[in-house]
Image 1 (cartoon, rainbow, N blue to C red):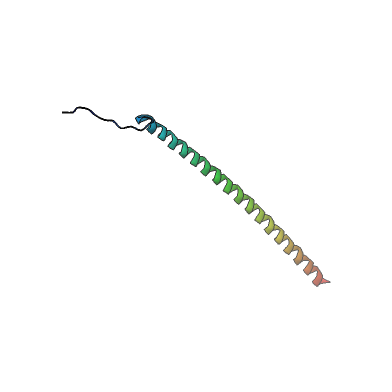
Image 2: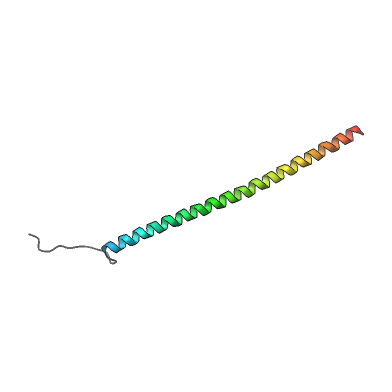
Length: 78
């Protein structure tokens, strides 16, 4: 024979807190996805800048070697 039943809930209420926790988890996931996307874009941008700079340096070194080879040929022919 049951005289009374006891329901224990926290101060915010039983169901409302789980809904709020679900919204917070979804918001947290969206923020993490946004930050992941932002970091990926940042890394791609930095990589592109570094690669372009390295290509410029490589092109200038090749150009200098070509100019040096031309002057050596001219010096040897004189």
